[in-house]
Amino acid sequence: MSAETNAADPAKPRWQRFLESTGGAALVTTLVGGLVGAYITGLVQRGTKERELRLAAFREYADGELRVVQRVWEQIGVMVSASQNLLVLTEPAFDAGHFAGEQRDAVLEQRKRLRDEFNEADREWRRNRETLGFLLGYYHHGDSSLEPTWRKTQAAVDGFVSCARDRYLAHDQAASDDPSCEASRRKLDRELGSLNRSLRESRRYAWDTSEPGESASSARSATVE
Image (tube, rainbow, N blue to C red; front, side, top):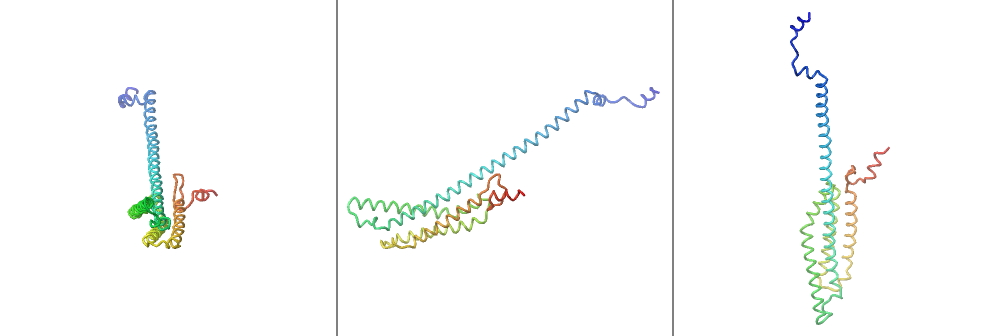
């Protein structure tokens, strides 16, 4: 009977006998476990790398946002300061006709310096104001509410600059009492306040999942019942 069975059933291949042995089974278990472990480790490492890349991208974006905001306020500040200095030149204290000799030369030199500073600031402002508006929108997640706010701020800056230039070119010392530029400056201050609020509201952080314009605290409270 056993001879017939052996004749009917040929000997198992060596690899099959090895796999069915205790040592073979242990080896297979180790190999499979190692492959599974390596696969899981790869997934974890890939996920970690993706998170690191996202964090690096966010940091780069946030740095760009800060640089743009600083550039906006610096550009506006230089332009407004230069315009204010131009208005100062319309005051009687800067009338070169009231001085003589070296004092007159010093007044004329100071008038020229402030005038040149105004012209340079005006050139820079006109060259960059449209670019600054675009960058503000780009680095604040495309918040559509920023564009009209920036346009109003830009118009207010232009209005104050034009008033200062017109008063200076009038060559009329009595024009220093003209309240129109004071009204332009107050309007500019209001628009700057609105721009500042819009920038704060549109700024988002890595841990903030709210939409632009929605504060982080309100977003968190909305998820807690």
